[in-house]
Each structure stands twice: as C-alpha cells, then as structure tokens.
Length: 492
Image (tube, rainbow, N blue to C red; front, side, top):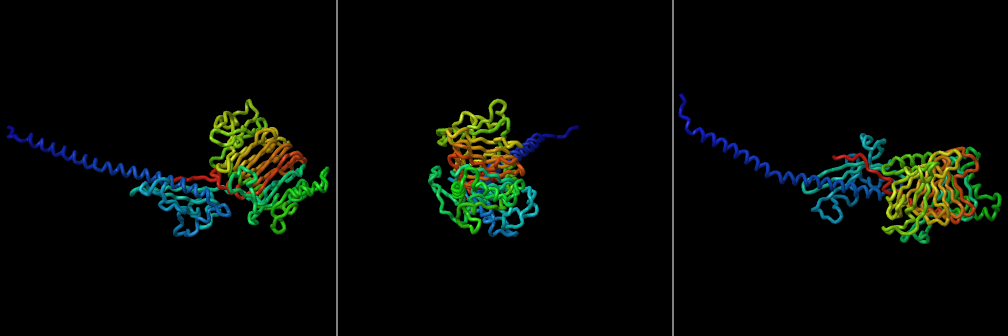
C-alpha cells in the first residue's frame, strides 16, 4: 500500500529550480570574464605585433650601423657574460612613429653569438667574445608591451661583409693580363664623395683624405705562372712602350693612374700606385660570391652561350619619376631563351622585360652567372650595342660571373662592379663611356688561360674610362638590405 506522497512535486520543482539557478549563475560568472579574456587576447596579439615591429626597426638600425670591420662590436660595448644583452640606442620602450606610449612600446636589444649553443641558431661556429663581433652575426631580441601584456621575439641577424678593395681598379685573379691601347682613361684611388645632386658628375669631389686613399690599381701578391713574372709587373708592363706607344704615350698612361703610393702611402701617380696587395685574392672573392649567391633574396640571372644577356639603355622618364636609364631592357636572343629572363611588365614604365638597376637612394644587387667557355669568347653581359644607344646607369652591386662583361655604350655605376670566374674579362670597347664611383674588380679564376686574352681590356677608341675610389659608395653598398638577413625566428 502506497503512503501519502503529497508535496513530492513541489520538492522536485524546487530541486530543478535550484539546479537551473546554479547553471545560470555559472553561465553569468563565465560571461563576466569573457570581456577580460578577450582584452587579454587582444593585448597579447598587439604586444606581438609591437615585438615584430621592434624587430623590423632594430633590423633597419643594424643595417645602417657598422664599424671599420663591417661588424657590430661598437654596439656590444658594456656587455658582460652575466648581462650579455645590450639595448640598441633609442630603443628602450620606444614607440612606433605617429603613436604615443599609450599605444604600446617595444624594446630592442642585441647580444653577440658567443654562447655554446648559439651554433644551433646561427649554423656557424660561435664567436669568441661577448663584446667583439668577429663574424658579422648577432642575436637580436624585441619585446613588445601593451597594457599588462608582453611578447618577446628573437632572431639571428647576419651581415655579408664586402671583400676589401685595396685599389680603385682591382685585378686580383690568377692572371692579370692587361691591355691598355689608349691614353684616355682615369684610375683614381683618391676618395671621392658627394653632398648633394649626386647625379651631376662634377659634384663628386675629393679632399684626398689619407685614411681612405686607395691604390690606383691593385693586384694580388705572387707570380703569374704562365708568364713567370709577378702579377704587379704583369700589369705594369701594359703601361710601358710597345708597338706604336712611345715614351710620351707611356708617360701619359702612367699619369692616368693615381692614388696611394706603395712607398709611403702619400698621393702619387704612375707605377708606384700599382701595387700587389694580399687582402683580395681568388679565395677571398670566391668565398664572398658563394655566400652572396646563397644569401636570402639574391636572384641570379642565368646567361648562356646560346642565350647571352644584353642590356639596352632606355631614354625618358618612368611614370614614378625615375629615369629609364636605370631600368634598361634585358634580352638574350629571342626564341627558346625567354625562360631565362625575369618576368615581363614587372618594372615601372617598362612594357617588356627590364631590370631595375637601382639608384643611390635604393641600390640594387644585380647578379649574372654565365657558363664556362674555354675559348674565352663568351660574353656573359653586353652593355648596349653601340655608343649611340641610350645610357645605362645603376647603383649597388653588379656581378658578372663566368663570362665577359663588355661595354659598347654609355655605362655609369655608383658602387661595386665585379667581373669574375673562369675565362672572363672586363672589356671596354671603341665608343664606350664608362664611369664607376666605388670600386671595380676583374678577377680571373683560371690559371693558364691562352695568351692573347685579357682580364682587363681598354680599346684604343674608348671615349672615356673613369674609375674613382669612393668610400661613400662602397659604404652605401655595405648597408644594402640585400647583404643582411634575418633567420631562426622564435618566440621566447
């Protein structure tokens, strides 16, 4: 027999009501924290963006900073093994341009890659000192802060240091055969600079500071095996009397090369500013170029014997105001060769295939690689077809590897021009005008090339040939973004 169960429904209803009330209270409690969670997430995201911005600002600062060895030792002053991180100048709680501290801040610091485990980050042997950057590598850390949130990011920064250029003209290869069939040239090791309107040649002047003076022409040390004479003597023989070049002709040639004296470092002209120097040789150049070709962002254009590359100057001005002379047309023989060319219509104001050779405000790395031709007849890069073609002008680094560079027109370059590899030549033909402010290097890596082929060739009717040492332009090249990289990105 069932008992009296009156009131059970009420008890059950109360239990259900209490359960629902608890669930509602729990939901409301969680909901109350959601805005704070969202704010924390937004603040953390913003702090990360600030840290990323700090890395970019710090990277630009490192690009623009270098000591006499193209290293960052000057920034590491004050670092210790106990406190290796050094805050970059003006980057402690720095703010982004146009924003105040309420919008967040970032702090950027660096240390040298001297710690035992750093080789896992950098991929190379660790440096030896906490304060001396011996390998042009540092570790950079940026911390972004917004409200109470912070994020720290870390990267490795590498700089590819330029090889030394002891002369305005450098012939540091395994052969230094030189042909000078003109008296109309200028190889000047004095240091030239420009303060304004640097597209005007006359604005490049020199006070000839002794500390930055270079040789007019430098070779490597040692003896050229196939002729049994030193490299220096081999080059100097091109300034002597031979054939139709009498003593007056020889003296005029000698007067056209000037710079640091091999005797006492003072300014001089003639053979005493042609000097063998061990700082630049085939090994040094090969090491630099192998790193440059493998560097992030380097694009190597392939020139072949079937499809040789030719720059053709363009006149006029592009829609963005830049002169078309710095954006020449690039061709390589037409049918069957187009796959080796960069994309068409990629350069402002050019409807075909052009290459941006840069300006002093935006220098470029332009790298051509040819192929071995044991007959020494291959032209890896041809500059114009005749002296009547529009001029070609650029700034930065121009590299031609394994093939001749031949100028037939008007060519002007601010920075560094390197012609290197096997069976190569830097050649300047009749009607050509060549002006380089910075350094020119023509390096033959093949010993024993057939006699009669020259590493440096200057034709009798070349209209003008002027190579001037310019520390200002070489420094500009060293500070190019293309010679710096970020790697091993991680969050701390």
